[in-house]
Image (cartoon, rainbow, N blue to C red; front, top):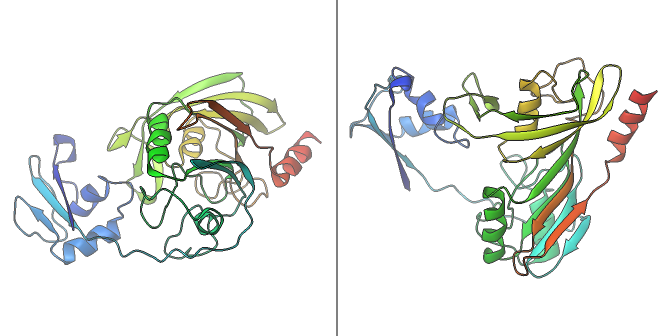
Length: 302
């Protein structure tokens, strides 16, 4: 059991207790918080409260979070597109449609299942469900990922992400014709209060998020862009491009219903660069756009 403590600020006064708590952590849902409330794992000023309690400025809230029940990660002989590998790190090119790590509903067939079979030696920092995973990309986003094979490598690679020294460039097709050649989106991202499964640009309970973009090619109603991440928030490119009025084509969560027939967002992690965790040598890898995106681009050109 891990205990988290929070103090209610002025701008959070009279929020529902489940809404307030869920907003404190990207991985907590309101339904999960309701279960903790039902099990008396939430205290306000040391006292139990009703599930519909509205928090007040200055309230001291403690949440006792039970340890998660680990899923058994099964090593599976799934082919991997390996771009680089040594005793410290492996760089893989993830296909569209593959989930990165196991979760309820996706216990098998994930990148982690494949890595467990291929590597046998992955960093344990992120626990049994996410061994070796330093950063992740969404199920329907394809492209390059770095994975740590030991804890020292994991810490050094994660530090580069925090210090913004790694290079991550994505290729995307967006709705609309962007008139300018490049730009920077500096807008904090947090959990969407009205939809806990989505992220949004917000000043409340959010984290810094910066995306640089440049236009690669314009079509009649779409634009091909390169997006470079300075930070790495959940769904960052998808949220940021929607925020400036150019949502990703095919995006079922953040895009319009009338879109390209591409079965998921048109987003590819094309370039990955980092300093090797042991030698400090700079390594950079480039992955070609997947065939499904290339076909769409050719159709747009015609």
